[in-house]
Image (cartoon, rainbow, N blue to C red):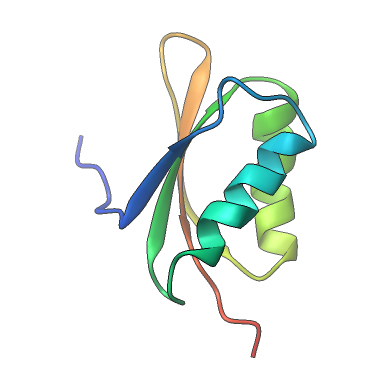
Amino acid sequence: MSKAAVDDTIDITDVVCPITFVKVKVALEDLEDGQKLGVHLNDGEPIQNVPRSLKDEGHKVLSVDKNDDRTWNLVVEKGGLD
């Protein structure tokens, strides 16, 4: 299974909602439009809310993959607001 090349990664398995999305949003601020961020997050609220919130803000969720330990890996492409 090939992983999409990412420009940066963030692990938010140690935080809970709504801080999960805040951490992802801050990490995206350091990237240029079109760059990709890998996010490692927990099952439950984070995987339900973070991808939806990213889409609502104009970013593209490129992949969502479940791991055997009840965590997820997601790759998001930073979108421009123009």
